[in-house]
Length: 254
Ligand SMILES: O=C(O)CCC(=O)C(=O)O
Image (cartoon, rainbow, N blue to C red):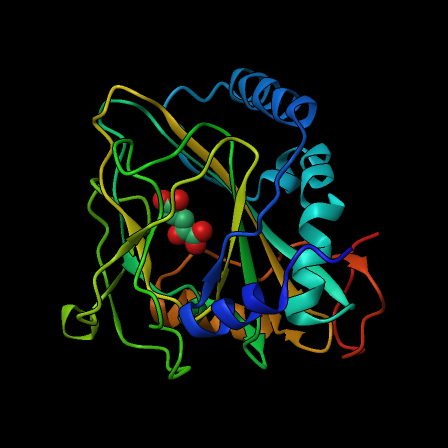
């Protein structure tokens, strides 16, 4: 049985996000929570907030990104040739957990054609109280990368902030998830998160999936660092997790 129903897929195209009616098993959730604690200790991270490239830091994270629950749903949205090119933790402390500014992902991602989805997987219970992910439903539909400002202040976890004039009027939707449940969102969707001062940690991890028919353009990534001051993605490892490299131009990691 496929994880996404026809209604789920229609909802994904309408809203830019879908929460499949499934998640990791209780055993996998326990394993994931223990792994997060061990990882934070091993990396000596006390104030995690945003930890990019977790697979590069510890390849065993990849196991969670290729769970059939997620990969089958991703395949329904982007096809059967799939590369994981990014991963991160967003682990906001219960006090002083920093906000994620409103942003779109795609405007600084060197993927052409720009086609990619993110799975956001809850490790803790995440809800409006501890500042779960918030999205502007439908904001992906024009498939436009809006302009962003660079803001290097330390109150936010990303330095790319959507220019306020592009913040569309549709009310934000909170993506509340139990541990082990996940959402999948489109690369053009406007999203962010409030600061967390709830007293409850709010941890999730993300995996970024692109169809292997697109090209991860490392030269473009290097230019984006020079011109936009964004995180350097030019040396990112690419993990072909299903199918083949249809573009023939992606340097896949062993
Ligand atoms: O969890 C968050 O606060 C932000 C997540 C995010 O921006 C993303 O997954 O692209």
